[in-house]
Image 1 (tube, rainbow, N blue to C red):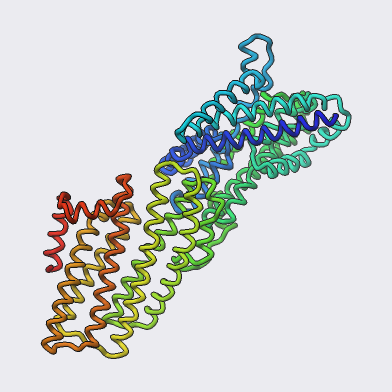
Image 2: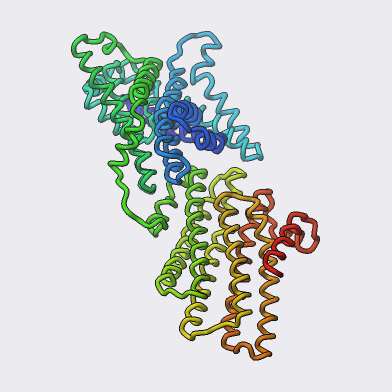
Length: 588
């Protein structure tokens, strides 16, 4: 094999891998969000999960990408391990679709329509169409679709180059000797694992094998062990992704690895025992691209059929491998880093679900801090104060890491729905962090009341109890609205915020009257005013969060215009009704 053939082979391999990557990215961009939604909603039983996993993987051309999605869903709690098992099994079947497409390279015939079915016939046409659309299209969606044509054309043209360059290898004694070594089942499996681990794609590895098969030097004795090894090697990118996942995310990745390893063993051991006894004649037959696609499909379907009844056992086995440790329900620093791993950025829908889970914890943390801090105003407990202080420090870390991660995510190519989520989260994290800050301020007021033995008048106590109840309700509605995307709860926040503002003004005026009548002191008044000011700020931040939820749901980011509309123009009947309801409830 001369220098020219080596250069062509290397170039063809590069085109093949780049084309597959480009096509996969285009497919995920165009269909990924919808497919992820389908996976999330329709994987309620194992058999259905197998079918879904097969279809989704056949469309996006990557079992690893499908499994990474699943790891993300399990990691964020959207999907259970049992649901994940079926999809992972189906992904192994779906990945065989690429091999069938690539088997077109083995088509023979001299008629014009047969020529068009060969890569050398249709690849240039696809590249030309894709390039024209990509260059002149203005919409992102069309550019993404064009990248599918470009990627597919480039990978098929690369396979054509590889096949032609590798053609000279069939007469090379060195190549023949090397290929013969791989007919050793164990060595063949190891080589298959290494090749796939390096290029991180089972489909691409099988495609390379199909290109080499066109040399006529590869028999089924060689190709079958390589196919088995490639199946295991496909687990490498999934295991790498799981490094940044939580316990269940790691378990999902282990399911993928165990399924492939056990599948290879249950196929390989009886197959080679029977081959040793009966000596299958087809093992010495030269492999073809179609034959490799058939062998790959038979192995994957066989594995699923045999292992599907034991799906629940996989979940138990992975739970034994990745054990639970006793931890607080709160996410600590390492947990946040695991959830916001940069690897998830490659699949924005998963990254967004990870962000949502972290902000959900942040929202619950803020609610807990506000509740505990308000309690200190009437029943001081130093341990609970320490808990609020720890929560505030954690909230700062949430905001810092989430803000950085969301900015990175926003720089990716996102669809409209994904962009809305990123905008909503960026708007909300600062407000949730500020709620924790105001909880700290209330702690200081509680400490002052406790240390100085401050007592409010009976009327002052009644006023604080009333407005405290309003604050608890506005925070609870805000957190409910964010956690559950509850628009009804969100709609109740702004009317109640207006009532809280009214109560603050009313109670400050009432306090001045008591001060003038000598019913309370200036020192008591400072503490009382600080509490009311923090309550007003808490309700303001709740309003910011709720209004952002409403406006982004309406695909309108102008929150100021919305607030001006309902406050000044009075054209929102629901707002007026709720405002009236809360006025009566809290005696404004």
